[in-house]
Image (cartoon, rainbow, N blue to C red; front, side):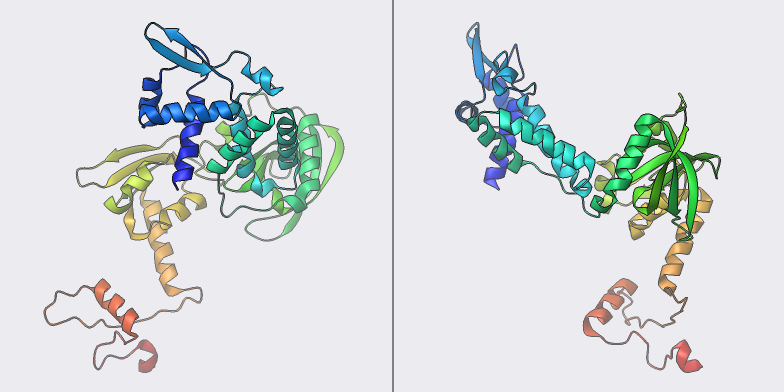
Length: 368
């Protein structure tokens, strides 16, 4: 753990040494949250690793910065922090391994590493070990390499394609002629925005559900006003619809977690005196938003709109019934003192395996 902290500190130090007028050791210590002695030691480590540092006197102070032309000393037009960003990007693209995107990035990194000095390469590898990224739940696209290649070329050449697509809801294959506008990566998946001649509008297609793609001889003109951000601005995730005012109240238990993240550009958050968090969004109340709300269970309440509130309530009731629509009736036994809550009673029964039925109570099945 200590080694990881020191590597992260070295990364921050490099980012604070980018060109004139430079920074003093005192300023660097304040920015890194450490003592000056530690900064001096880290500067020595960077110099030993081949990082071209220099300094200049500014009155009574000495300012440290990257030497002019330090990118040329690497033999490539990148700074050390830019190289680190490329290595970090490699981790983010792990789900695209085996596709042109990941292969091209790895090829660029191989060329870069071939051009740096051995000392600089060792430092870069150490920094790479100090920062990484995880993308759980991602989809693997190596087997869709050919599909991605055809789509990418069609986008670049503005060529219409014919796709065989498996619909999300009905699980039915259909053949569509589409004008592919843009590929984008979101939530561990790769998606295509394309004008669909069948639907007569721009639609979203999941790349892994494209079962075949064939270029057509026709070309198209991409609309000048098409913008992916505008296309998705009312979407909380991928499902599009008409934006509505969504108002949610999160409990104190999860307020900080929700507050610290940007869930949507329209998000507005307000802490209440109770410690709860009220969040307002302008998005379509579609499936992605509903799943997000349901993931917080009892820690969130839908304040508006009423239709969404009713949908969430219906989902919870359906979950209690199960996939078969069954209903279970039990009568909970309350202690004479009345101090034991229903939640505590259920937890105790779960631990002991004893029934929650009061003496003499019967289930609906027994009545039948």
